[in-house]
Length: 73
Image (tube, rainbow, N blue to C red; front, top):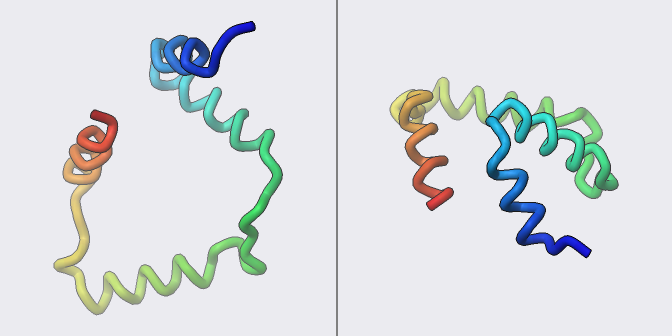
């Protein structure tokens, strides 16, 4: 039987678009344990209002990419 470490290595060797599709399929296969009555609209509105009030808290896409990459290491 293949181990989770072996599956992870194979998955991480896939090109990014294929990893994204695989991740979406895996997430879709899990039961929904967190569900917002409004599908997250209230949270999105809260975050939008927070950015309107504090625009200096926003980060660029490049900054987000760097933070995500740093977490992967």
